[in-house]
Image (cartoon, rainbow, N blue to C red; front, side, top):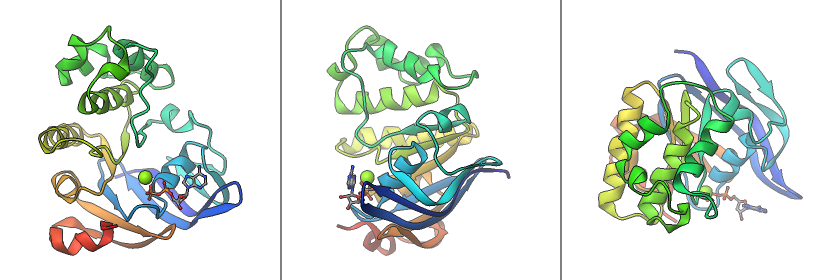
Length: 232
Ligand SMILES: Nc1ncnc2c1ncn2[C@@H]1O[C@H](COP(=O)(O)OP(=O)(O)O)[C@@H](O)[C@H]1O
Ligand SMILES: [Mg+2]
């Protein structure tokens, strides 16, 4: 088990707003870990710190054996970490296929190509030449995941992938995440949907007010016990 990603005492800001107050967490190869927490506690800001969007002013993020105090937006992708950002970020003036190709631009070579992504999500092949934003919400999430896979990550970070989607689509995405985990991709799942969390993750962190306040194994926790960590 080798370390892929580690946050040590990460304090992050937007301008003067101090949002992360010393985040500590670690993700190893093959890990299936969830990050739970209510709205506004700093989950997305933690992802943004890795992407250089929020500003780290104390502490650091380590990717494999290298420490970054100021990561760039492409640092993670170059080193085997793909992020599916909250809200999907599909580019509407690009086709589905052009969106997918973007994912390969900063990533690494490997088993994930247009062909294998289309095998995973056949609907994307059917819609390959249409604008990305003409897809339904569920299809756009598949496109965002496909684009992330095109970089051939060892670790896939998913920020609230179920947001706004129908239960049947969420179930389908859960099966995809389990399949990817089964193929050896580590999964870091930020989610409010606890059924999806239980389906995919083995352990969890809980964030409150910009800090990790609890961690544990999911099998020992019922949905009811987890509920108070995420309810708004
Ligand atoms: N671009 C921004 N500028 C200033 N404050 C922000 C910005 N984005 C988020 N915040 C604030 O940072 C806090 C954490 O937000 P966020 O990380 O999005 O929470 P979560 O993902 O856990 O719901 C919130 O108080 C939010 O209002
Ligand atoms: Mg968020």
